[in-house]
Length: 264
Length: 255
Image (cartoon, rainbow over all chains, first blue to last red; front, side):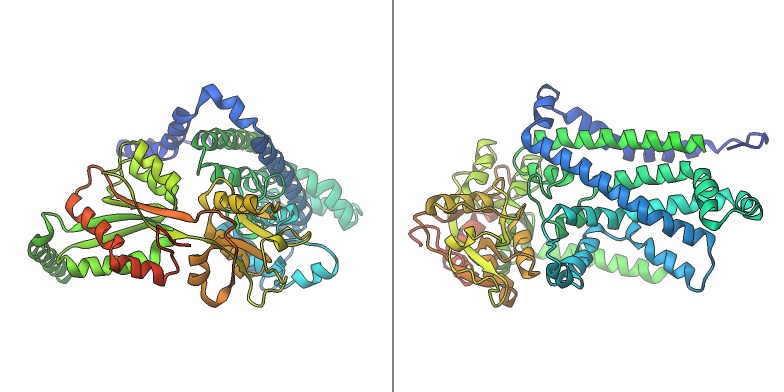
């Protein structure tokens, strides 16, 4: 991004105090978590069988959810950014709803859709697919909450990239599919990557919808956040150690999205 | 601008008046009771009776999981009385020197089988739970109701393979009421509180003792006298009747 070389205008000095306070509100709890981490047993706690199962399941489901988000979210973002139809604004608002919806509400909604007595539950049962209490349910919950992150991020990238190159390609005889494949998508690739990373992070942190909709069983549905929630009951040290693992992943994700943002 | 100000002054004055009137129960007028979530119904009744008997005293109930409550008291939460859902959890408070005297057992609770209305899977006994393909939901072994479930299954020689292990009894109940699970093991009092949303099936006790609920005044409480009064009311006829109405068993000699 190019910055205009305008004269520098200072900020009022009193602004620093609330700004520092705000930073403290965010950073102090993380420091407290670090101070409370049982470093001596850290490795043992995060590599116990239950921890490894939870971490493995979290990584597998979050990866699967990210793939589904890219496959479904990219077409959604292109349609929302490149077409114009009645009610598009309303549709966009509704599709982005999970962004602001409490995840537990999402979980209840999913239950009434894919649950045994849900809207589609019967259909799935006839097909011999049992969604309830399965890893599929975890992925569904994660896709539900993470998809809007990818759509928002990619639609923004599409809009700021504009249509100039697409128009040129089309005028040279390229068909719409070719324009999409050879011009549009390469142009917004950084936006797609940062959207996918955000969706991955959101999937990894998914808790409320999973707990409500998928249940909690080691190796099947008990992802890392659910494992932390359960361990807090009896083994606070393990809960803190596993929390730190998620913090580390979050830091990594923020770093990656910043990189992707700079490459734009 | 002026009207709210006047209202505020009137409210403050009224508040002072009320506090002044309520001097009979000691200097302060609030008793804070921490209780396991399953005790909600009967404790609200006991608190009401307590307030009627002690003029000017207000009982504040804080209801949560027993482990969370003990952790809060350890961290300095201002509790006068603590009641937990099992003796193991209470022992943590005793070990931390935060119990004022010995905890008193005041109620007991048994596990029951909860099934969706109509019992679609036709579950009748503990042995039925081992049937393949049955969607059984239990509490995780880490929490008291899960430990109790494991003891019961162990005593009966039944191997249970749940589709989900939840963190609390209410989470198990929710999976049954929504019809996602064919059966779940919860406390008898939970089945009673859930009303028509689930059907309860009593189980043979297999020689396993029920969960015992202990209560104790917290050491260093602001209101030690009132705390002792509350424990007395709970273990007396009033408290025992309220607990029995909610489906609890007596603490001793009950089956």
